[in-house]
Length: 72
Image (cartoon, rainbow, N blue to C red; front, side, top):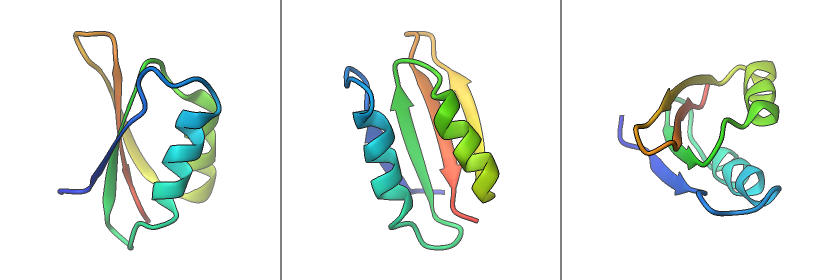
């Protein structure tokens, strides 16, 4: 998959959440997005689960979190 990248490291809440939601609303079915953050976004993950998005989370060696999100 080759989707969009949203690098929200260093941003204060709620800006990472808002940026992620803006991109999610533009994804076509099956399209994906890579979200890079400083910490795990538990409220966003609950929304993704609720709305049926597939997502995988990985902690990087530098402490960042990568979340690949796929539009259902």
